[in-house]
Amino acid sequence: MSDWNEWSTCSHSCGNGTQTRSRTCTNPTPLYGGANCTEDSSEDQLCLLVNCPINGIWSDWAAWGACDVTCGNGTMTRSRSCDNPQPDFGGEDCVGNETDVTECPDKCCPVDGNWALWYPWSACQGDCSNGTRSRFRNCDNPRQACGGNHCIGVYRQTDDTCLPIDCTTSKKSFLFSLLQQEVLRE
Image (cartoon, rainbow, N blue to C red; front, side, top):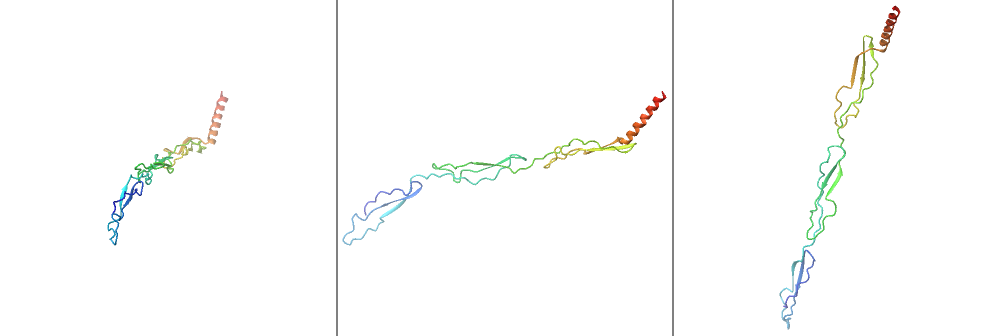
């Protein structure tokens, strides 16, 4: 067998590859019915010139975080990592954003109700010795919403010290007649 040739170039420029070398059955060449060489004429070996660059790949997005407000318009965030795999041996970083932001589903804020102004008093009803009137107001300035508190207090008031209009007219007439009588006496 001849001496081994030099190892061939590695089959890959980076990462694991193979290289081979060979020899011939020429030292001496079999002659006159001599037997061929019985040893291997080639052999392989693993080679590693350098590690190949590994480009980074994003992991899956994590779950969305909590909304940054408890009600109204807010945002929530989720994140991911450049580690599936992470860049190595001169490979490129992941392309894109590490975080993602979106609006939260709208959730209304509680609004406490507040009283509007009182409506005018109703006409006085009853007899000339005892009349009543009433007035009311609405809980809509603003109206209670989204679990807010209802207005505190009464929505209706009554007054039992009024006199109906016809009683007032009668009393005025009565007083006017008394006044006239006094004037005439003088």
